[in-house]
Amino acid sequence: MPKVLEFKLPDLGEGLTEAEIVRWLVEVGEVVAVDQPVVEVETAKAMVEVPCPYGGVVTARFGEEGSELPVGAPLLTVAVGPPQERSRTGGVEDAESSESTESTEPSEGAESSEYSGNVLVGYGTAAATARRRSRVRPAAPAAAAPKAAPAPVRATGPVPVISPLVRRLAREHGLDLRELRGTGPEGLILRADVVSAVQAPARPAEPAAAIAEPAAAHASRPAASASASADARAIRPATASTAPAGERVPLKGIRGAVADKLSRSRTEIPDATCWVDADATELMAARAAMNSAGGPKVSVLALLARICTAALARHPELNSTVDLAAREIVRLPEVHLGFAAQTERGLVVPVVRDAHRRNVDSLGAELARLTEAARTGSLTPAELTGGTFTLNNYGVFGVDGSTPIINHPEAAMLGVGRIIAKPWVHEGELAVRQVVQLSLTFDHRVCDGGTAGGFLRHVADCVEQPAVLLRTL
Image (cartoon, rainbow, N blue to C red; front, top):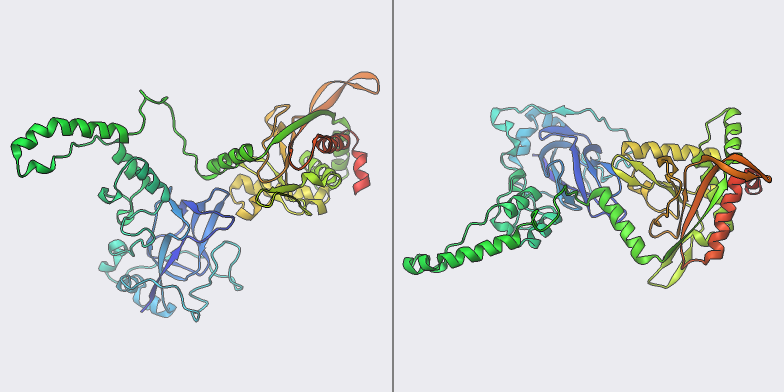
């Protein structure tokens, strides 16, 4: 008899506590291989394909596309058994007959063909596993309904609610979840169910004495109705008469993570900003010469990234963080350079690891790879965390200047505006030059204005005279 194993949403790392189901990659009744991706989820940091560590037949899925699940909540159940037994009996029939069996974690002696222990894409077994999707045909008509007795959701107690956001919404509006009927799989209460209950007209409750004394109950009904109406007004969300009308966009996923980080930065970091205009004509000429020499094309962002690492080598105070608990400034030995990238899903900051050890070609290649991953939504949480300094090229939006908000818990961010032809005094003569505005926002706890100004001035000198970089190559 096959065992029914429950696969729960794994810990995706970096302190993430929940994820939203974007797209299911398997159906109930489908055969899955060990480490085959079964669902695509969106966390506050990235889109991730989650592989299942079991091989067998999917007997149940938990959560609809668009719903949020906390880490540790059930994702799906898989009937695991000898391959020859599943192929002989049809798989689904065996899965159904064992669905009432208590789900257990695999034993230490579980065969590698059934369980890998791996939960993240890229951490597969040593041997390549076939990813061909196939559906098991039921051996009998009765076996064609695998949803007849799905495994219960055990992560939420007696109330069929998975999402902590749903619980909080109900608590804020005074709703008893035990009185709601969920529309999700197996009666799962979704956010839409709570919203519908909140917005539904309240029905006046009959007084407790209505059965024993009809006359008294009839007399008290107006007062009870008025009280219920008042309660309904308190529970219902604000309408157009009490709040501005308009579209409401939930602060969740990447948008919510950005909001939280920016708010924390403004709350905790006493920041200051300085800026300078620089003549980038020579930098653009140097880039053109490098590109005409053959090889991979050099981007302006790659040159600016190399300039940043050179400036941080001179001013390491800005490559640091503040430990509030210990009241210490922690100066970091490695430069992990983040760069702001605008995508359809929102603003993300991929991180180039060990940027201080890379030349312009290496920086350009890694920047291009991470930018493409950002556009396709395939960045991993590890590629979005651990930055020590951020470069923000907002010039791509056609603006000249800005005051960047520091990417908490870093200590500084360099902002770069558009490079545009402007009148400029060059060698004592008025000329048209390629000018760019550079701005540095820094944590005033880690350094004073002299250090920040020295960093920014070195960046500007390298932009105006790229030969200055030769000293650090």
